[in-house]
Image (cartoon, rainbow, N blue to C red; front, side, top):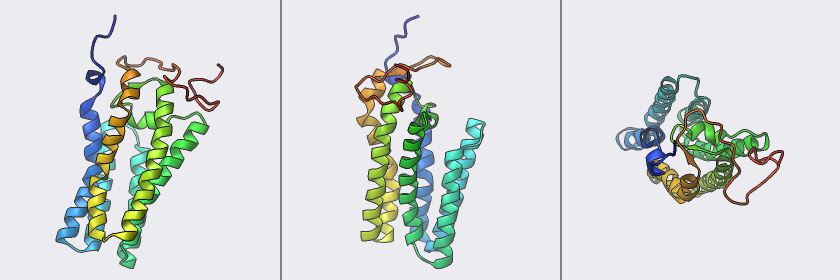
Length: 215
């Protein structure tokens, strides 16, 4: 049967909003706490909020959330350094590590034929493997730029300014998805459980691309 729904209707907007809330929640807790309390208490609450977000992901997905768990470990590590040493540089630098590490992980995954971005976002929308591959490359560039931007902000601005920047940073994720909407729109599928391994819509091809192997 032909699918007559619009591309936007095939996007699970509730799931995308849920992911947005999970991403912005800990940062919002940190910036509000920083206005009302000291740095140490704000950092501790940030780590707790990150752990709560990861626990919700575990409960909602029904399996261990490796990426959110990694966020908790990094938050706990850099949060502990911030509290023990009384230096906000550590919790600020954490965002650089998260973004740069995410870019590296996605890139390494592509080299070994793993679409890590697909695992993270496919609850929101389902694409062909080729489209996921192209979107993953673009995400690598985006995360690298976010890591560089975080470095500029925390090294040149106050902790309070950085905290507000960190709070609005998830909005940039929505901008990234909006910019890539043509790619997403043209490769959306609604069928559950379908094997989606078509080639990418454009000419980005590589021996590492799971959609073009053996071609």
